[in-house]
Length: 109
Length: 170
Image 1: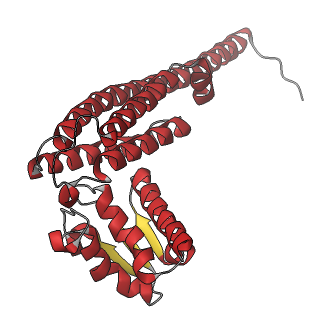
Image 2: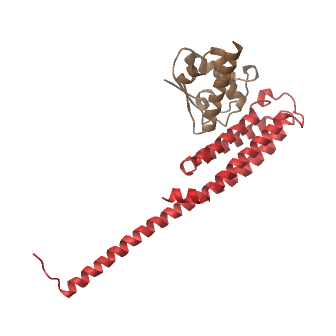
Image 3: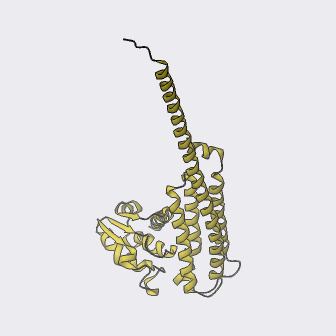
């Protein structure tokens, strides 16, 4: 099981959606920290609480984008991904993005 | 074998029995009073936090409407993110204090919706130009802010409902 603390391992100031607009974006976090372990079936715990906060576009691109890039269904992603946070809303929001991205992927394919 | 108590022994026993009854009564009253004080302190904390959060949501609403209708402002973005996180943290802090878990969860979900409405699009790197005054996103933000304030008000008022006081006192 791999533990990723966003504030310690990535940045305390996550911002933006796309990598071309910044190294602290959701896309950069996904590509550098999530795609490798999740793609190879490793269990990952993401510790979310020590940053200054998250924009929803960052969260959608980091976690919803995981479904689009790996082309896994929501269950497969969520089976390997856990969130460590006191903010229930944050956990709910991320889970929603993963499910929505999977639904969109299903409709598109 | 039955021994007859002297009048003075009977008096002593009667005194002890009375003292025990008084002591038990005092313990029960003290216990109930302490429980009521704790309950009142808990209610006061939930209500004052609800009031603070409601004011904070107003400030976030004002800042968000300004941010989305102006050119991109990095300082304002950070201020919004910190404000939204602070709201979420204060709500999370009530988990161990507030007995109305359903009401608290409704507040957390409303705060999440507020974050999504403000930062889900046209935020950070996606803020390319100011939004027009009639843009749908501005209405969505205002709607989410009002829903959050409504959920906070419901949480506050529930503290004074007879049912919640009775159930938490029992």
